[in-house]
Structures are given as C-alpha cells and as structure tokens.
Image (cartoon, rainbow, N blue to C red; front, side, top):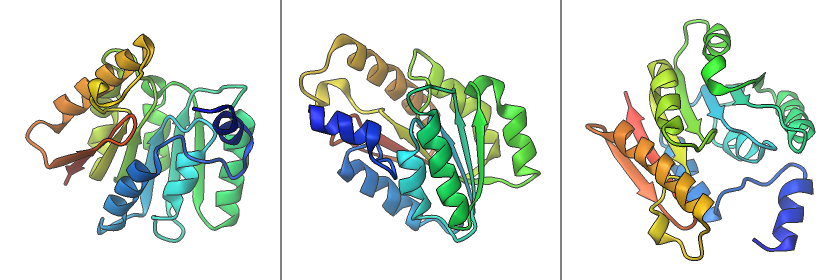
Length: 197
C-alpha cells in the first residue's frame, strides 16, 4: 500500500472499502443474485467502507447492522457513514463491542428476522473467524462473506503477521464451508462465499 492509499483509506469520505476492487465486485455480484437482501450484518466495519459499498447491493430500506470494537481511528467515520446511510433510507444499527459479546444485541435488532447477507471481517486471530461463524450463522438464511481468507502463498511480499491472519481466517472459512456451496476469489487477501439456506 502506498502513502496515497493510506491517506485515502483513512481520510476519504464516504470511506473506501479496504478490499481489492476485484474481490469487492465478486462479493457484490453474489449479493445482487440473492433472492432477499433486506437484512445485512457486518462484523468488522472499520471506517465503514465495506458497509457503504455493500449498501448499494441491498434492497431499499434494508436493515444494516455493524458490529465493531470502538477504535479512535475509525469511530467518527463509521458513525458518519451510518448517518449517511440512514439519510438514504436504511435502518442502520451500529453495535459497538466485540463480536463474542454482541450476540444478544444483534438478536434484539433482528427481532425474529433472519440475516440475508453476513460479512465476517472482525478479529483475524486463530479461531476467531470460525467462532464468529458459529455465533452468528444461526441467524443466517442466505450468503456469508469471509474477507481475508485467501491462500497466503497466493499473495507476494507478505509479512509474518499478514500470513498468520490470512491462514487463521482461511482455516475458519474452510471449516465453515464443509458440506456447503462455497466459492472463493483472490486478487489480494482473498474473499470467500458460503451459501446457507
């Protein structure tokens, strides 16, 4: 990432998604083909770039839920993104906390409804993506999107931290995908899709 990319990611508004354009189009295309796109749940929203980008594939007035740990570098931008989406007619809920502590808050927002599209992009530590899948997949009747689940050797010049978090997220994705229809694309850190219906 160049200095210009870093400035764009941290200062532009609406915020850009920290995804490769190819992988973003791959995920957006899968969402657009879903029969229902009324309830969206995202874990790990950072400044709100993917929250904003995926809103363009949802049905008008969709419920959008973000679960993310408060971060002084992203909090203001995510709040502004949520406010902008609200003005566009979406039913926006920003839940501030760790994913493992926020299940009941998400359940309360859902009020018995199921999630049509779910993005897992929060804690990338060992076992964490799979934990989030196990916690939240009972709410899902549709499409799950895992970010950063590519093959580490499929990307050049990775440092040890990047290799580790990709390996952890990929392991979670592969376990969650067992016995289910799934697909992956990797142009950068990798994006995986799982259909749960």
